[in-house]
Image (cartoon, rainbow over the protein chains, first blue to last red):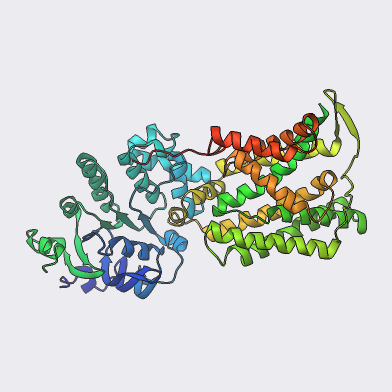
Length: 251
Length: 285
C-alpha cells in the first residue's frame, strides 16, 4: 500500500509536513480514522477520495481548526499537534478553504493585507509587497479597491490563493480550488499551482478534478472513509487504472 | 429648538451604549446585554468620585476606566468565554446585567443621585434652543468616538482583522489572526470606553439603579435602527431614538415617547430590514 521511500527520506532529510496516524473529527463525530501522509518542499502532494473520505477534515486538522484526537502532525520535524491554529499560520502553514472563503465585504487589497497580518510587518511594508501578488494575478490588480464579494468565482479563488501567499507560507494547502469553476479557469489555477512548486513551497492539494490534479502531482494519497487506501509517488502510477481502482474502492 | 438639543444629547447617551453593543457584535457576533450596566457602573463610580470622595477629575476618569475595564474583563471570562453562540450569551450576559443591577443597589441604594458636571455647568442658547455645555461635549464626544473607531477599523491592520473576524471567524483564524485575544481586547475596550464616558453621561441621566435597564432597551433599539455591526449606524440610531423620544414627548404628550420609538423602529425595519446601515447579501458565486 505505501509507496517507495522518497529519495530524501533515504538521505535523512525531514519532510516539510509529516502526518502520522491522524485521528480527528468534529466533536464526537469521527471523520478521519487513520491518515498518514507527507509533503516535501517544492512538491505537490495530491489528496484524493470520494465525498466524505475525510480530505477536508484532514486539512482542517493540519491547519489546527480541528483537534487531533490521536496521531502526530510534524512540520519541519517539529511536533505541532497541539499548537494553536493562528500560530501554525505564522510558522508557515496556509490553508485555502473550500468555497473561496475570502472576506467578501472587504476589498481585494484589504483581503491581501489580511493575508499578511500574521507577519507583523505593519500595513505600509505589506502594501509594498502586494506587487508580487498582482504580478501573479493581474486581474486582481485592476480591481484592487472593489469589494471582493463582487468578483467572479475564478477571481475569488485567485484572491484566496493570493491571500494565503501573502503569509509567505512554506506549506500551502488547497481544498478543491477548482470547485465550481469553468474548465478553462481550473486549468489556469492549476498552472499557478504548478508554478508555485518552483518557489520551493510544498503543496497539499485536495481535488475532485482528478485528471487536472494528476498533471501537477508528485505524490498521491487516496483516502476512503477516513483511512489511507493508496500512497505513492505519482511517477509510480503509470496508468490511471491503479488510481481508479483505489478511488472506487477496489485497491 | 430646545427639544431637539435635548433629544440629541439623550440620543448621544443611547449612541454610546449602541457603540458598546456594536464593538462586541463585531468581535463576537453576539450581544453583551450587560453593556448598559457597565455604563451605569461608570456613572456611579463618577458620583462616588466627585461627590463622596471629592477626587480630582483625572483620577475619577482613571478609576472609572480601569474599574469598568476590569469588570468587562471579568465578564468576558465568566459570561462569554465558557459558552458558545448568541443564544447562550443572551442568557449569560443578561445574568451579568442582573448581577450588576443588584450590586449597584447593594452599594449605592435605590435613590436618584445627582452627578455634578465635569467642568462648566453653563447653559447656552444655540439656534433659539437651550443646551448645557455638558450636553454639547457629550454630543461631540460621541461623534468623535464613532468617527475614530470607524477610521481605525478601516485603516489599521488590527481594525481590519476585527472586521474580518466578524465576517468569518474560521477564515480569520486561518490568516493567523489570534481571534480569542483580539476579541477579548475589543470587549475590555468597550468597558474602558464606558468608564471614560460615564462621567460625561452622569450629569444628563443621574445615577440611579434602574438606569441600566432603561439604557439597555434604548441602546438596543438604536442598534436595530442603525443596522447590526455598523458604527455610524449606532450613532445615527442613537440620535434617532433620542429625537423621537424628545419630540413626541413635546408634541404628543408624556405617554408617547416610548411608543413612538417603537413605531419608528418598526417603520424603519419595514423599509430597510437590515437597518439604516446594515449590510445586504453579496454575490456568492
